[in-house]
Every structure is written in C-alpha cells, then in structure tokens.
Length: 117
Image (cartoon, rainbow, N blue to C red; front, side):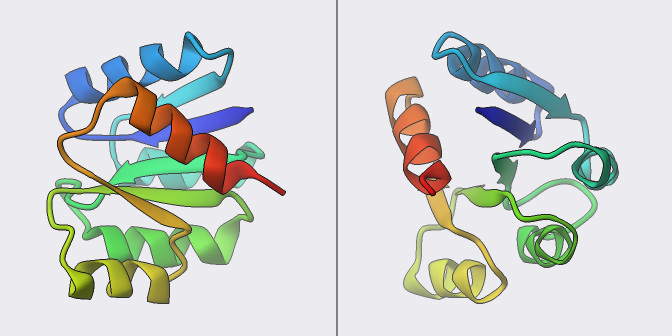
C-alpha cells in the first residue's frame, strides 16, 4: 500500500511515516499542501492522510482539490471531531477522519479500512 502523509509539525509526519512503514506500507511525506498536491499529481497513492489544519489551507479545501485530481482514499486528521466538522469533511470527499490524539494502531487500522476496494 502506498500512502502520502501531509502533517504539521514535521515531527508528527515523521512519526506517522515510521508507524506505517513498520506495517510494510510505502510512505511519502509532504511538508505542506503544495507538495501534497504535486506528489498526488505524479504518484498513484492508495491513501492520503493529512492534517485538517495545515498552515496555508484548510483541510476541506485541500480535500476538495485532491478529490478533483486523484482517486486515493482520503483520511483527515483533526483536533475537532464535532458532527459539523465530520459532515463537512465527508461532503468534500473525505473517506474518514482520525481525531487527535491517536496512537499508531488506530492510524494503521483506519488507513487499512479506507483503503479496502
């Protein structure tokens, strides 16, 4: 499985990448939303995981842009797990959300669940 992770701060992204790689997933890390969009345009990802609150763009905007460009499953990591926030994510094309804080096993389980054909 090929996964793209776009998170801020980079230490969190690196930790998530290590966790997924230990489960035999191939992981690319994007430092920001522009890099995530560029990588998704050139690589066929199974799942894209990104932070709802990246520095320069809101997660729903990035989700909408990714959904227009690729077919990867999308998992949004969020500090806000309100009904309204989840509904907004689903409306723009997210396949799931992962509330902060989370542990490695939950991340792996959610990535595997949304990657199912």
